[in-house]
Length: 295
Image (cartoon, rainbow, N blue to C red; front, side, top):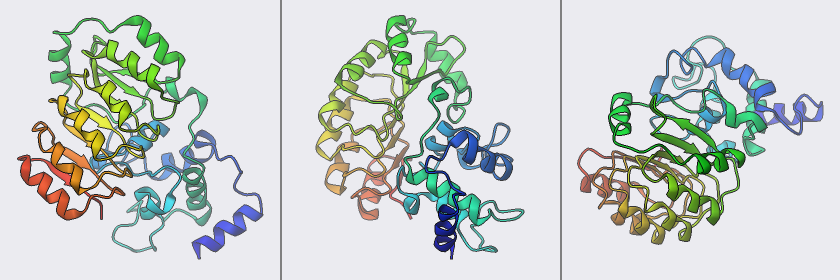
């Protein structure tokens, strides 16, 4: 029935061919989701009060698979029948067919964000462990100003994780990433803590540029061409705590490489070639690590 409504709405011109997050999607999320997934509260570590936050996902990994609403957890939950125990929002009225269709159209179109997204103040989920970031920052040099300027000109999102600005999160998931840009990240190696390269199309060869990032704790490689072979380049990231490989060709045969990164706490493998059995083996090789291969 939902698909029928989508077709009707499209034929009536209710849904624009170019769905805007700010104009069309944000008001729906603000009205129905922000009380549990906004500035003051983030259930399951998920914020839905900005486009980048929505793409970043929560504790269980991304809730949007770009271009694929049928594989996106957010779309799945808002599309459940009224009264279902898992429907979102859990209280109040379900989203209307028009609202669901709008979110579906946005995801299908590639979940585009406005040109000004790089300047959004609430770019991603609020960072945990602020004290730890501050302590690390006290030991670090100032980030290279020229490199920061170059990244900002390329519309990468650069956000400090501590008041001094010496620990950084960089999100490149919405821009073109090439070898030159990745090479520039090496000049920020001491300062880079979180890095999002999701959806950029990079492959195994490009991961060699990440080896100098000695303080990297969170790496998002969702929807990239990274395979089992490329994971060997991540072995140098001895502080890596969270790794997102959602929608990649990574399989069980490559997961054993990750077993050598004993700092890992969470690995997300939805939509990859990894199986639940392979995920369990990886989790057993790293005490305390949670490996999520999807529902």
